[in-house]
Amino acid sequence: MAILSIHYKSKTIGMSHPFIAILPEDESYFNVNTSPKKLKTLLLLHGLSSDETSYMRYTSIERYAEEHQLAVIMPKGDHSGYSNMAYGHKYFDYILEVFDYAHQILPLSTKREDNFIAGHSMGGYGTIKYALTEGHRFSKAAPLSAVFNPQLLLNIDWHDFSGEAIAGIDKVTEQTELDPYYLAEQVHVEQRAIPELLIMCGTEDDLITDNKHFIKCLDAHHIPYQFKEGPGKHDYAYWDKAIERAINWFMEN
Image (cartoon, rainbow, N blue to C red; front, top):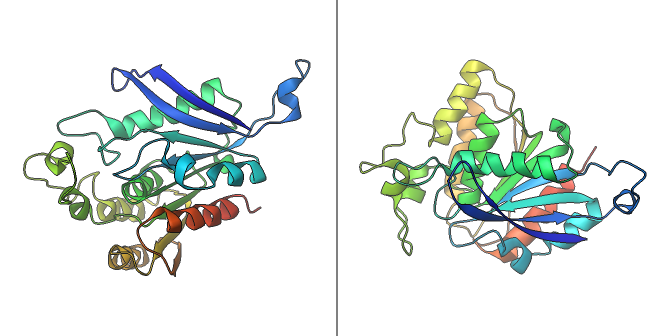
């Protein structure tokens, strides 16, 4: 198993920024006379209080990746909401740049059926936005304990976090690219293909109501999904089990 910490100068946000890559090893990587095996890939997005290293430190993501021969790309999203910020960097575009950059320099399959996306909390908010707008990139998506009502994220009281930086002074999100409800409506109107969805949330999580409200929106727009609820809080004890379950689902034939 190779663990790579990659710093490169992003053309999107105009500065050096890191991401972590987990690369399961294959015999082809040690044989210069053959082409390297192309790995299936998970783009994994952290939450508001986390960073690109958090899944490595608080879950068994490395073990799950090795078991399934799955590469994992973990970018740093800071406090961006994975959005092109009103007062800040274009993080929505930056994450896609990381995804494309990793596929250029690492032995990763570019086939849609071999690429997946997941994330928790703020990362779940990012996951659903990418799932509903970048469906040509991913075959499956798993928002975990996700924020679906953007106002819940923008109004959170957290250290050095500003909802205004993401959405502007008035924090208007309705009928914009910041609003998963609007994006779901657009998927229905335009009949766009999106990834299969597995939405998970713990029953002791304050966001369980938000999750149940959003799946009603998916029902209204005839967007298929699976919803799994079970014991768990808004913490890594739950996300460790949830990402394992998501990976098992990603790798099903």
